[in-house]
Image (cartoon, rainbow, N blue to C red; front, side):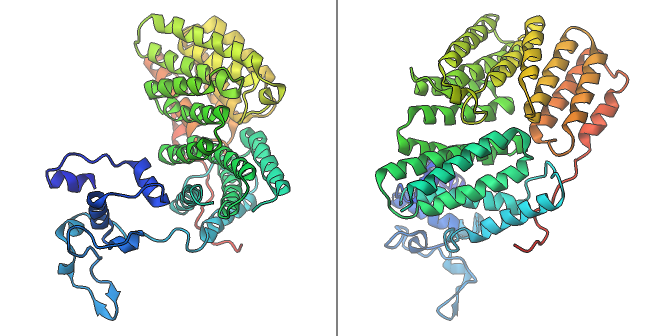
Length: 460
């Protein structure tokens, strides 16, 4: 649409992913001009998009070569702009109730189980399509929505269980589990229900979609992570729960944080802090930690000296907010915020700030508090290796990095692990040159781990 507007010499349209999603879910209706360009892009008439009446342009938009009423449509029946920018016509995403998407995930899950412990895996096209199909159906269902309280209790317990399993379950396997539960919740929301149950379902949808977004970060798919967090925000907004909305925003801030955009992460962290307000909740502690980590990245890349003081003040606010949280919130790794996570994230920020003595102490305390939770333990070990490097011991930093990769094994060699390991290798080379063993470390990181194909046929 933007390309067509530009070609026609018009001002750039305000359409984006959020507005298009609102059109698809029925939250908004496009005006005549936008409808014309949507029809041009999809090469269909307005009725195919769910809107009455002819297009304002007065001619057809249908895709050529399609048999309609026994007649093959001529190429000339389509306007030139639709021939220049052709996209496949819209399909009805709810025609099969999402069963095929669920089957893709079931086949993937069965393959992961059959392979043993599982592997980190890669996001294949079928899995990505199924994930996005389930998320889109939830977008549509959120605007149209009877289920027993007992069934809701069961689903909420399942979501809590997913949170507990997050650190110790290979991400591709957990993604399948989470999305299958997410799809079940969406189907329950297709029918109208009492407001209290509706709010609980929306809150559950927000948590499951947010968890899917977190897993997508681990798997390295930024676009899908953002899409799931957007769906999570839509669901959270339906509840009016400020703490939940703040949690979603704080978690979403991890996308730019891990992908090297500290300024966007900083803005989202501040937004989360504002949403949390004075409510004692996980986000009130998590948001200032994300803020401090983003500030530490800015300071590390040549920011102003007072950035260090700002980061330390943010960490102080996080510790004060953590003390106000309930015990249940302090024990929940995903939907709450644990003491070991607080120690780890403080240590990470202090490492990037160059405060190696203080960082070493806190990181060691963090590691002692972890039982399992392999993902965070590995990231902590990378921070410890960075401390050794900042102190001038490149050989020890390399040894610790190699050991961290060895301990994590193949099942958890996700994108986030590889990014941190590659960052360590790059920093060692910058400070110490090609020291012995560094090339071997790089070769290990460059070799892909075994993955389970999502496209092989498995009976469901």
